[in-house]
Image (spheres, rainbow, N blue to C red):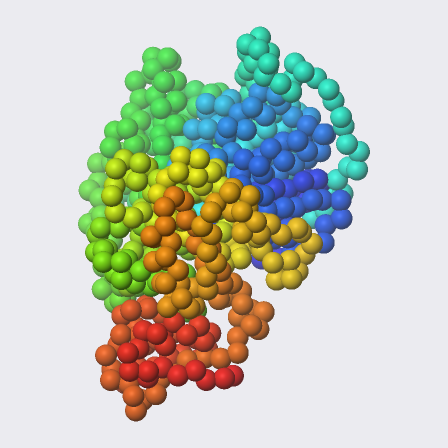
Amino acid sequence: MMVSGNEAIAYGALHAGVKLVSGYPGTPSSEVIGCLMNMELEGTHVEWSVNEKVAVETAAAAGWAGHRALCTMKMSGLNVAYDALIGFAYSGTTGGLVIYVTDDPGATTGMCEQDSRGFALMSDMVMLEPDSVKQSYEMIQTAFEISESIGSPVFVRSVTNVAQAHAPLEIEKRAMPSSKTVLIRDIQRFTKAGSVIATNQHKRLIASLEKASAIIEQKGLNILKLGEKDGLGIVSVGSLNKIAEEAVELANENGCCFEPGSISTLRLACTIPYAHSEMDRIIGHCSAVIVLEELEPYVEREIIVRAFRANKNIRVIGKLDGTYPRSGEYNAAVAAVGLFAYSNVPVPEHFVTGDPLPAQKCAARPITCCAGCPHRGTYLSIKQAIKEEGFKPEDVLVTGDVGCTILGMNPPFHILWTETAMGSSIPTAAGYKLSGLETPVIATIGDSTFFHAGIPPLINAVQHEVDMTVIIMDNGWTAMTGMQVNPGTEQANEGKQHRRIDIYNVLEGLDIENIYVTDPYDTGGMTKTLREALNQKGVKVVLARRECAIQAARRGARHSYAAINKDLCTKCKRCISMTGCPAIAVADGMVTIDRELCNGCSICFNACPFKAVERKLL
């Protein structure tokens, strides 16, 4: 069957007999749990956890109990999970515990270009890196085996172009997980109560990595092929293993002359622990080595250190000599630059400039809200409230957060100033206010992000009596990463059993005096509510509630649409310039609304001063 790299991880875990799978949504990793959620899996628990720290703690406990457990996240989530993960790494695991993390060279899914190998390096944890969909399926199973053999968690790191790639894969039968749970009481292992306990656990962790090195070499995960003596070698990592082959072909097509089999290659499927044996052999065999790895030069630095210790004068072509960038996703053209450098062949001009035609032919298309998105009403209401309170947009700080909420930074809204990390909108706004800012501050945050990391900073703001307004944009879903459920998702909408946590009840529990509930489709009403909140002292929370338009449409909760009355329309295009709704466009000189895209939200009704937008029933 045709599966993605993420789905291959899911199927591989099932074949390995996984007992528990936990994680938090984050592109490009989300499809692992998304795939498993669509299955009836007797004996296996699968959950979207409230955040990555909780996810890794839940999975690690299952590992302590003797079961195989998998925890999934994107690179940014590893920052959240690491506080707990390093503690579990010290204590080790009884069953197999695998942490699946996806990095994003090129930042195609947003956030950052974090290289998660650094976490494995400073934690003495194994890091495996698949180069294909098939190897993703196989490697997750290998990771469980290694984890159980060494008694420590194991990382499997993928990147966007492997996690999101699709390929045919033969799926093997699922292995049923054990029903027997182990309960071990061991203070020396499961606590950090004292320096002796902690240092002994650290020593055990270091020893487990050394044990893993022997297992990995025995399994032959890293593949070394020696070519011409004193010739060129290529060391490639994970997803770049196949790109290295394409790069040689491309270089030969553009002036280089590499004979088949002349280049020595070391294809790394495991980057931590370093493949010292294979590294030493390729260093001793070659006069120059190209190191292909995206983001940070971890392997390159180790190659240089090994060569220095062996007193081998070898040319290392990589990032540290300026050949390759530390940023961006590598393709064959980027990888081939090192081959040109080795061969003293000029890099073809089109390799540097790229193809300008796509940019010339395609109109600029900034990311915007979907048609009917309730956040559109929230942004417009914020802008109007600021205006009616007598402030200029540049006078009022409005912080954004991770997720669909950040779309307010783009046209036509231009309302949000910041986005850094999950939950940061609230403490960022509070920090500005506590620094002496006299004009209002507004923090915007989505419902899933609020559950993930927004509650502690809100408590902090309440405790310190910060004068600020917090808008929680509650659309009922973790929408941007693929419509995953969160603790506030209505059970009737999800279709599966879970207990819903109402954000309003959480706010009441925090003893917040001014809580408002509004419908963002009612921009007039929400503007009035925001103005009232801005004139109250202390922390005020506005709960803007309306289900994600995409999910509502999928359930058939769409009963009307908007249409343009051509007799009243003056073609001022205010409905477009003010709302930015993708359902509204100009065709043949007339403003039109796409009936299939429109969900009848009515926001454009308020935007038109000539009442030319009318509601039509389906």
